[in-house]
Image (tube, rainbow, N blue to C red; front, top):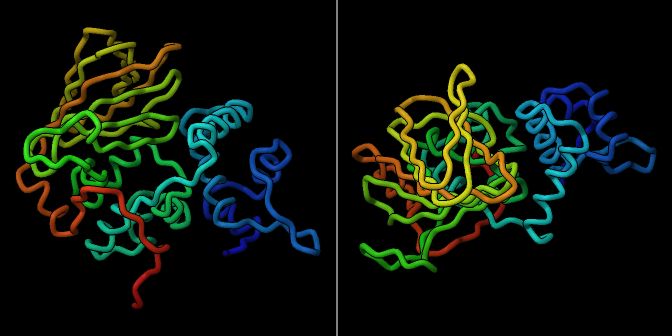
Length: 284
C-alpha cells in the first residue's frame, strides 16, 4: 500500500494542500495519520480525492451534494468492492500503453486510472467513452457478454455496466457487429458525467421518463416518453435526468468498419466477467 503526503496528493489531482485540509474539515476526505500526526494518503484516499475534484469541476456541487453523491454510490454497491475493469487493463496493454501514458492521454492521474482498472473507483459514461476511444475499441468491448448467440441475446444474458450514480447500460447487441444497441437507465438527478462526442450518429428513443440533452452553446433538448433524438457525429453532448423518476432509453450507434479488430486482437470479447491481478507495468 502506497502512503502519500498531502503535497503529493494535491499535486496529483491539481488542487492546493489547503483545499485538502478544507475537505478534511468537511468530512469529505479523512486521511490516516502517522505516529507523529502527519497526514498519510493511501491509493483509496487518492481515488476518492480525484472523485471529489471531478464532482466539483463538473457540477460545481457544494460539500453536502458531494457527500450525498459519494454515499449514494457506496450504497448502490452494497458496501462491496467493484469488480475489476479487466478489459480496460487488457486493451491498454494490447496497445502497448503504460498506465501513465493512457492517463496522460485522458488527462487523469495514473493513480485514479489505476483505481478504475482495479475496480476501486467508479467511472462515468463520459469517461468510459473516452477510454474506449483512446484504446480504439467499441465501448461495448469493455463489457462481459454472457449470450451464447450467434444472433439472439436473451433478457438474462445482456452484458451490463453500472457507472457513477447508478447509471446502467445493458448491451442488446452481440459483439462483432457494426451496430451497437443498448438499454440505458438513468436514476433521478444522475447523468453522463460530462460532455462527450461519438464518431458516428447516436440515436435514442425514450421508453420511460425524461432525459435532458445539453449540446454546444448550452442548447438544451428535453425528450420524454415516446420521443426520439438523433445526434450528429462529432457533436459534444451531455445528458441528465431532471425528474424524480428513472429514465429508460433505447440507444443505438453505428460502428466503423473494422471497429472490432482491435478488440479481437486484444482478446477482449468475453463470455463471462474475469478478474486479474493488480496492475504491474512491464519493465522498460
